[in-house]
Amino acid sequence: MTNAEDLTLALRLADEADRISLDRFGSADLKIESKPDLTPVSDADLAVERAIRAVLEAERPGDAVIGEEYGASAVGESARPRRWVVDPIDGTKNFVRGVPVWATLIALFDGDEIVVGVVSAPALSRRWWAATGSGAFSTFQGGPARRIAVSGVSALEDASLSYSDLSEWEAIGKLEEFVGLTRRCWRTRGYGDFYSYMLVAEGAADIATEPELNLWDVAALVPIVREAGGTFTGIDGGAAGPATASALVTNSHLHAEVLRALTTGS
Image (cartoon, rainbow, N blue to C red):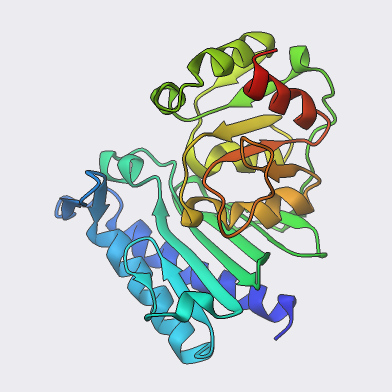
């Protein structure tokens, strides 16, 4: 399979996910439960992941599937060279409260490389996607695709930073360093979740970072950011890949300085 063929499939999967999730968004009978980690899961999360898995099992039976809600498709299959990684609804807390900032995230690993990424946020009428070597693109309200690129901002004093939750930085003992970084930036906003990273990819923000993430939170974002000209690492500077557990995304111009600020506080 080529990246283009896999991207076409991923976009079709996003269409199906949007149909299910939008129908359940704001529903009076939405069913919500708490997972063992006390985070919420809705019937929409489960239905979207089941639908995506069903299509992949039919059209890519040799590929593994790893999802937030149902785990790896079978014992040992996460070790297959080609692995689809799915977050059926990134931003479930927003989804269940009626906040429209949520999305389905779909990624494809070929070995340790993430070669396809799709982020679909139907309540915002937005979608972003990329395949390795083909550029990053977005649409608004179903309009024509446009190629996106990161900003040219090169000084922290001119930079816009987006983040998710201060308590996560406190939990890892990095609150002082993170707050110090925010004070050096021109502007900070808590857009959170996938949205922070897509804003960097399209040049509307310059820095996005979170200290604790799961693979399905991150995978789909990586090729979009990189194809848009950005840099995606962990907060320790490590390369984004199967073991990624945090995220630092910048427009590339600012990456070294932001990494230094988070590492040393200077």
